Image (cartoon, rainbow, N blue to C red; front, side, top):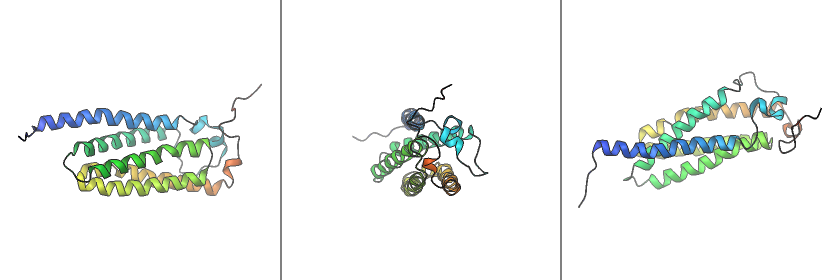
Length: 185
């Protein structure tokens, strides 16, 4: 016997998934960002030359919070699309792009590997673009929720590239974040 769920039951099912995926993505994102100090807390980042269009430090957590919320909602929509043949591929692409995403902050702020970080941004953009195409074949709205992320990745790639150009040898400009950044008096 085949049962059909009501519209309300389907909405509640999506909300249950969203209550898991949104906090999980946000917590993973901010957890990765805390592996190495960023912004003004990072002596290396404070010492490097940044492009004139670099947003203030407070803008980054605001932007990433919004992006991670949209990513979590988008994932919940895909998980909720039980009948789709592409669902498994879409979830796999999401996980792979998220893992790549989570490596950027420790590579850039912790290891000071500006060139490698730029490659990671490029990989994130390509993976997210492919993911958006697959998501669009399952749920158009889920794919549209990725547009701000793609736009932010373009901007982040530009900032990363400009930092690379403005700071040749950036990894040697300040002590590694793994060394003590405590100033002895």
